[in-house]
Length: 461
Image (cartoon, rainbow, N blue to C red; front, top):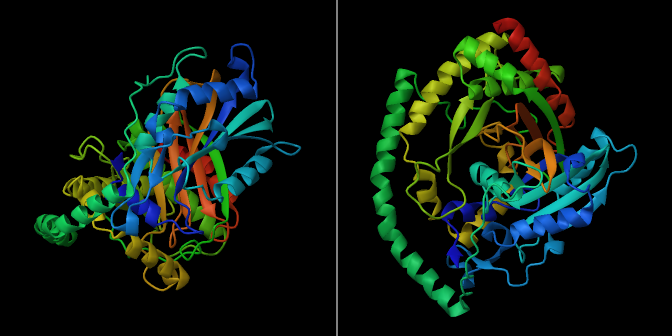
């Protein structure tokens, strides 16, 4: 048994019928590399063998009586791969449009919380490729841990063992209701003593933030973002899009300008959003603000919990027309943001999340959505943008070479679009997911990324 950390549990409480808190992935496979050829039965057998001893794939939630404490993970003794792995085929002509329409529909479906919180669909008929569309609840993974889970499924050669070997261990016993109730009472009794330890460092952080703001070296402030069409109350409908960029071209820009790959990615996102909004006559006079998740996995003192993340806020330079000028401004502001972020405890977000009351927090989120408060208060941030490092060399899933690896994060009330970029074998895979009512044409946004890369290269090289 493992108790969910406060941050992991918060992703459960944040979920509503419209705000779905699962992390999706679209994996494009080249089946010709599979020894002996592709069959669904062979793929199913390989995936079953590789997930059966990985706890993240075989554990389910168990609630604490009266919701006195965060839920716990217990082993699913009735685990069945067929509850999680499904087979579909694209309608003719089986192209990009048909694929993103189907995956958008799948992304908008809820998951059964009585089972391990993941699902995969094997989609055939995408030309000569096979696509795997995956969903895993954010309570189970963050960006870094999601990448680690890929290593349990993938290998460096078509017929090799997975990158991460699994060491099967005896499953812990499932606790009874009275035991969970007792643990919940004890946990709540100790919270007042724990919170006192957080007040002083939090007050010091506020003071340091004010000082940095006065010096002009603070990261962008939340609640300072301009309002756009995708900053309101969302629905459960999802649209997705994806594209590829050449990683060498991005690295060439990095070298020529002294920026980082992340600076370039955020600059491209800023340019793509600027063009998308300008084409619709919706471009704000001030810059959009993105929330950028930051992994603290190497700095956190906590040994438990799937999500070890913090976040910084970044202005995307959507108010700057010249792409090179935008990159230069982005590099400077990102340096300030990183320095500011480093002054924050790696466990600050996790520590405060421990005090979220399960029932109260869930009711508050539903009230927030029902009253459409996201449309009434100042905009916290316009969207979430993630940049996740992936494998620098080819990898293989069940013998099939991975030609595309497009991550798709959750969207929130008040921020109805999410952009995630992942590197893979010399490419940058850009995945965009949005509430369909917030972003009417996701592909119009996605298509701007290659254009922005070309514009930036023309200006900088």
